[in-house]
Image (cartoon, rainbow, N blue to C red; front, top):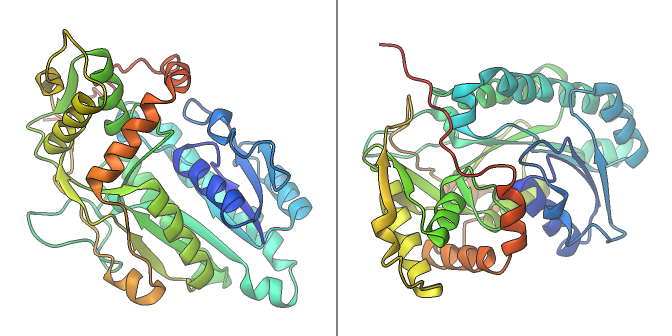
Length: 353
């Protein structure tokens, strides 16, 4: 099988590419613009593999995307290229709209042109998997979970941009019969995650003995999903998913941000004790909250299990331990990415009163 992956040098994209090449024996063409969060080092494990090819390309270049599609002739496209960090979207929303909305339009237009030229079984089985986020649904109260039928209520510029891209993917199916599928995943974690996100930021600051920022009270709840569970879910959606459908992919591991940070600190104390620092939990520092910070996310995956037979396997504590051990064993990668981002606070724009 030949798979075309956009954003394949990012965190989730690279995990998908590595899985497709190593575990699924797929031929993969990876496209990535290589912005600050995209890095070829995430693909070192497959870069020399004859099944893998990389092309540096901006998805806004529709004609070049179409050229790559025609040359490679994939059986499916996984579209993951996106700006993803909520804090950055607060400070600079324009690039999120450009990449996530206009970039998705470009991908849909190029892929539709390619798909329309396919014949027979290849046309019938072709799939465009649009990888999105549970953040499009907005914020939950203390009870309930997001389902595939939950209304869209995005509260951040990032979430709004992903909601817009979802609507485009759905519209292309309804209007043109284009075989698009939408996925919504909960918060991912695991190896190679850029340290602007909570877990790798916490790990790297705890290892250094630096203050670990927790927004507001830290009571905001997230559903944590190991990236390897996520990419296995995406594979199941490719193999068994139905065009026009939406599938939710969640970890089933709700946890407050404060509790999560405490778990990470405790594990690091065990895995890498350091004299002079003491318990890493003492490094936790509450900072002003993010504007419009959603209170709670939780995904109901019963429909995904019923339709696809998929459910997350990774226990949160086991996944955190595995993730921390990976960061401990890859100091060169950690140093490399921290040259791009030193851990400073992002998204400091204030909400209007």
